[in-house]
Image (cartoon, rainbow, N blue to C red; front, side, top):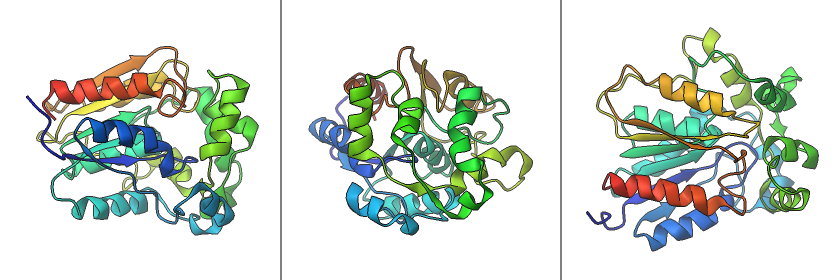
Length: 267
């Protein structure tokens, strides 16, 4: 079955990457007949440079703010979109799917939703960049080149990791990391997803086997959170990929796998 003409696809970035990093995906999906949209988070500038120059504009926003921001984007579309998110964007698209605001969702190495009890040490090391200082809850937090290499570029050459850092890295709010870290102790946590929704659209979760920021164990645990729902939840593992899998030189491998999954479901 052919792709519905112009089906909208909303791409949601995660912490520390600008929305422009979705550019190659947007071009590919446009060529495949979709209508891609790549909004930034609240406070993001139109460019990487503008966002870096004004970090205070992103400070203080939390998960609910990001979900509501994208829900407003969706409300302006002509049809219920497919939503594709990376890292914390992967958590956001699960929220949107659980709220029946999307036709389907792809969560690429998504940040842990409420209910995931174990975080591997590498994930805690990355989160600690913000969590080690309580004041960061209200601040913007930036990565150093070395922190980016550990959290995103650990499977890449130093040259490629540094190039991605220079091209796409931006300051991001610290608050979502604090909210996620306290999720299992907070009844009303914004990291809580309606995993029991029986009528939602299909969900694909990816796992990078060498991801330091969201280790594969977190993606597998995410899929298990949906076990009470008969709605489709699928897992696709990329054993040799790190957290940069959606934007490094091998991004096309992941993007093609996502496109194939969507086409198999006539989405």
